[in-house]
Length: 145
Image (tube, rainbow, N blue to C red; front, side):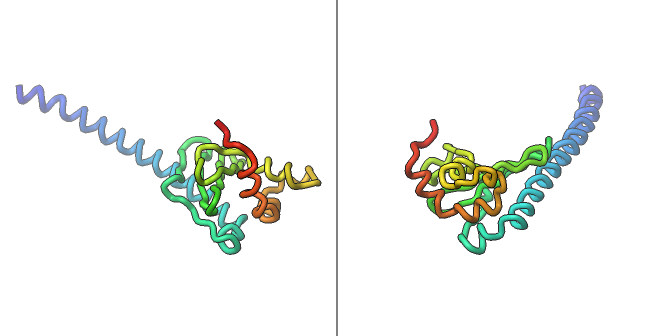
């Protein structure tokens, strides 16, 4: 009986060690993707923190080891910003603080307030220019269901 248990324990231990390495590798990939997005945000959007006093909501940020995917949520007081990176592209969404699951593309604000629609896809300058327009925009539209 003990010999059988010893024979079964060794393969299980080996399988556990292999699985542990795979999961550590995946976590390292997820952490790398999240760190890359955070660096990108701090480099390209420093005004969010210096000018508007926003802060990263670490509890809602996460990375994924596949396809360069990561999500960063930023608290701006009355609303939240969400940067989602996937396959090299970063898309921004906004939501009211009281309905944080009702995300809208930030381009909706740009379309509603900007006359030059060709400029709406240049997110950093447009986000800085229309930051004050986000809260009234979100107050005027009903939350998405």
